[in-house]
Image (cartoon, rainbow, N blue to C red):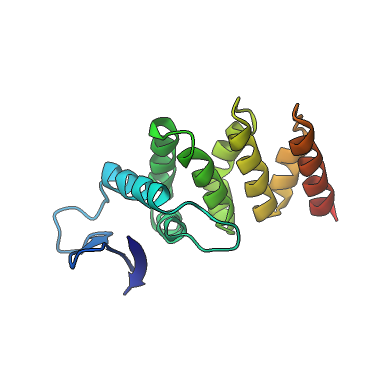
Length: 167
């Protein structure tokens, strides 16, 4: 599935000739996106194509659009994905939101990233450190300043990130 923007609307192009769009046209019954539909699409994007360093992922544009147009829905969608996803999808989501470099994205997703720092799963904690590094803001510095990581390699990485962000 590929995601593009046409006239400020996200277009999900699937492998068949059909095209599904979100958000819906103003002529539709409701202009509010169906949260579960967006959750399902994002889950499909994460499961179909893993997030890779240095490569833009289709989920980024979906989440960026949600943050710009419906931040409450963006948080609801992300919360549902974290609750319903398997162990490989949740860290991808956390890393993905860290790629959204805007004050609004940070405000929407910071509580979720801080929670990921407390996760029992090392992949979630690693993703959270990477997200905070991506934001590189005073809020990210504050979140990392009190972070205590028990795993040596991740603790070393978090310390280096915090040192770099403080410069």
